Length: 550
Ligand code: NA7
Image (cartoon, rainbow, N blue to C red):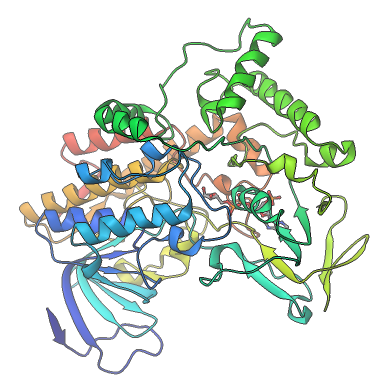
């Protein structure tokens, strides 16, 4: 399948004459999206080459191996399910830890002939569309060149990590560790003085996991977070067997839920007219149950109505004060912005961690970092010495991973320029002037539980490609009008959500507010996975009117 050819790949450092491999489709990424899409395309008879920067499968689950890393989606919905053997895959707990998610992806890659389609440890650095040939030329950082009719991305929503340039970091004599690149051999933190920067879903998982072992843990918090306990129970054999037997119902729940969770779409109740004691009773029982049931199975209006949301805010504020013994620490841990304005995390024992004598909290709003010193971190109030600094400062979500690749479409158009003001796509899958580039879980797709989204979108993309091949079309490209219509839909949905727009004030990744200089825009489809799926069905059943297949 390889042919030698002189190819101008435009990538620095490419050998004059690179051996060029030619396939029908290249898929970039080996996480849930990439693995499923490689499988789906092969099922439809295409020759496929996967390319992955990591040395193996897993995507974000390969890189994010920090202590405490786990899903906060219930295990029945956090899996590939295209084959019964994957439905039957046995996780040990309700919220599987990173190691088990990786084992699930390894199992899929090995069982369904996916792994051997990949070039690993190759980071794609450029993708160029050749109009004469209607082909993409994909080049990696190690000079590998693959030509394909289709360039399909499974880059993930959270794969481009943010690494702030803290002043003086180069002077620091201790060890700086990034949560997104935790040492594979592990890190012995016993007896160490540890700083942790960031209290997003990563930081709030890390803190309780390491606090019992370190000599001191100082958490540097910029914006306080709402943290629900996950109450992560073991899954018994009987519960697993019952889930497998009942999986079509579970699948139906996931497909009809706005963020792809196995919950009923509606609880049939809102907070309207409900007295505070009853609201508290319901929320208390859900707090004890754990996980995002707290957000999605209590009252239907808490994520759409600010007054209802305020009841949730008030409940968690009182919870924090009831758990954290030091009232000053409790006050600094207490958020006040709308619940859901930022991606809310779950973790077990997060607030309780601050009752430990070896744990301290620095609130950066009041006591900002001045610089790193040789021995530690200096804030406005003075210097603290650390042996290790853990940086868990989030991701340049949605567009970040694309901006790292020099993607050139029709006429050399640069995707980074096309997206300078924020994403511009059709269905979050395709972009005008970038024919045959198709994104699985790209910008403008739902910010939801990823595995079901990966399969839903990957299947739709594979069917679109199969249709184009059946029709003998050389290119698949959305019309400019379809893209503009979709962008307008994203904007209207975003503006209609007071909780989403509140994210502009609290550095929410959903609106680009967590990355300095990033365009403030709506980066995801905000009307729910179920509505998104209906849009995909409508486009397909109408014969892809938003696309030109020529
Ligand atoms: P998040 O949720 O974006 O959290 C990043 C945290 O790091 C958050 O507390 C940020 O504070 C903080 N941060 C970011 N930059 C800085 C600087 N420069 N100084 C201090 N603190 C900073 O990322 P996570 O990795 O925790 O979670 C990602 C999840 O989202 C992942 O699980 C996927 O589901 C997608 P801020 O709130 O911005 O004030």
